[in-house]
Amino acid sequence: MKLWLSSSWEPNWRSFQYFNLYRLIVAGLVAAGLLSSTAWQVVFLHAAPQWVLAIGGLYSVVVGCGLGLSLAWRRRFNLQLSSQVAVDILAVNAAMYAAGGVSSGFGIVFLVTLAAASLVGRGRLVLLYAALATIALLLMQGYGVLTEGFDAASFVQAGFLSAGFFATAILARLLGQRVMANEELARRRGIELENQRRISQQVIARVLDGVLVVGGDGRVLRSNPVAAAMLGEDFGKQRPLAFYSRTLAEAVDVWRRGGGSPEAVIAAAGGGTLQARFEPTESSDREVLVFLEDIGRIQEKAEQLKLASLGRLTASIAHEIRNPLAAISHAGELLREERRGEMQDRLLKILNDNVGRLDRIVQDILDLGRRDRAQLEALSLATVLAEFVAEFAEATGLAPALVSVHAEDGAVLCFDRSHLRQVLWNLVANAVRHSRGLPGSVGLHAHAGADPRQVELHVIDDGPGVPAEIRGQVFEPFFTTRASGTGLGLFIARELCEANGASLELGPEVDCGHFIVSGRYDTCQQEGPNAGFAAN
Image (cartoon, rainbow, N blue to C red; front, top):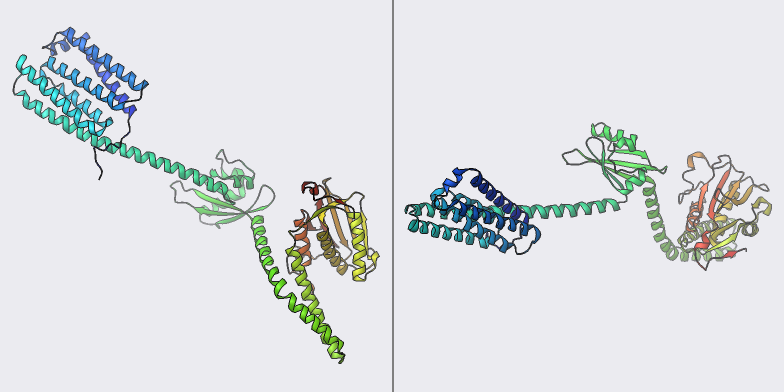
């Protein structure tokens, strides 16, 4: 149950200071009236003017000291308030006695004092102040009746005035409690709102998408750091949206008028592409939320999900497919030993070819699963490429002259040796397959890139090149133009390059096959003591 006399209360020093200032002003006005006009002096018939002035001056000094004390020493609030109320009770009773008792009308000053004290004071003391004022008033009036001939019937008026003291004190206290409760509620709501604002700002700042709040007049009111990075602008000055992106501003304006799509594609500051999505708000200012998504990041996330699926598939293939394939291959070899006719040989060949294809798919996926276990070392490309060409020619039965090597002296690439061999094997096998098969049809060129710390390895063939309609698909997994291909060679080559801090791109030429491996030689220096130069 809520009690109006509850002790859950905090001192209101500012209101108390205003109360003291009001009392000081009233005392000054009364003193000025007594000094400037004899009409004021006539009011106080039962005391000498000098005594009235002395009491008024003393009262002003006490009130002034109380005001200074409340400003300089914010302690013992109840004691300071009670002492000031007591001073008012004594001073007002003295003025009433000098002016003829309750009939003088000075009792109204009591009501103001009690109302102010009840608004700022503690609930338990409110009735005490009213009781003290009542006792002082009745004593003063009784003394006046006995000594100064005050009208005895004035006790009725004193009684009503005393009842007014209690009513004023109680009503003012109830009003004060309501005001303080509203102030406390407003303070708590303000704290909650500020906390919510800070949390919302922190959440928006950590969102991976860009967020803009556009006002009804087209100005950018708020934003997060991601949006600033995407558009390359500082949104602190609340400029119009068209200042940052005219295309985005026009799309928002058309959508607001109901004639456009809630989405738009715009250019990012770094040259990428952004997907903008608009959503209305229920604010009175017709604000609009604009969400910016990096399409490249979405594609990268989709690629990561695809890789995660491939990783899970790798484990299943390693355990569930390879063992049956080995059994089928072994059974085929046993059947081959039984020479039963040309039809059997043709069927066994089909069987062995498809077993070999499945085995290559399994091996490619297993190689992809080992992409994260790179042991980087500084490899001399002139030596590595020469050794690779010899190994490739011996393994495939091709003439070594088919592949030419041109490597600058000192061309060093930081790469895992087995990974680089796999990348070269996939790229060169692809180049040989599409080349004309002449000496020098496939070329391996290694030289420094645009950055002196960068090394580029070019694999070029004299074939017809990659058709324009499939250039964007050549690195996708399981995409192939051969009936017997797995579609994983170029995909695995690119993934292994990225695992080694390099990149694999398709060259700009359209009249020949051209792939570029770009890496750095100084990456090994950042990998710690296990990485070092290896010439062979």
